Length: 220
Ligand SMILES: [Zn+2]
Image (cartoon, rainbow, N blue to C red; front, side, top):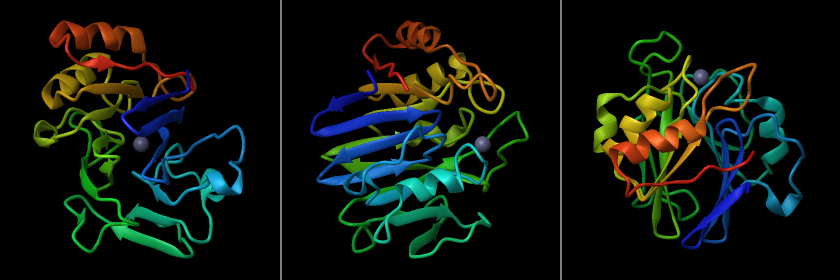
């Protein structure tokens, strides 16, 4: 299956780190990349979240496919790509709530960085926590299991498992155990030219640490 319904929210994996969250009558895209088709106009983004500037997360072709003139886009402040329309520069620590929420949706901007790799130094990118349909959905971006992740509260966690540029299965399983969400969905694997990663191995490792966490493996 490509998507899963959690409460009133539908979470669809678009492949790699790309997701479409649908709830509260809104469509929220995160890091669309290598989309097979352009969504119909009514299925395009109310909100688009970009985690960092790398080509497989901030892809101009795919951004063009999902954006409408009334889409609101959140982009890290250091991305050089210029956006027309409603695009807001954000940084880790920002909380879009209490008058700053985007189209009624509360969004928290959290850190995302590597510990023992040079690809994602702190400040390059971010992760997001989106509150939709009463649940908190955490998209980790490209990162390792950095210390602040232990403070993240989420009902659903979208975690990279590919290794090389991000956490591998083992590290991601430790991250899942620390966050302790109800559901976890692995991402950032399955594009052999970019990254490896075995979701079944991840699932077994998570259950070895905490059998209560539900691991959902989606098809891209
Ligand atoms: Zn990256």
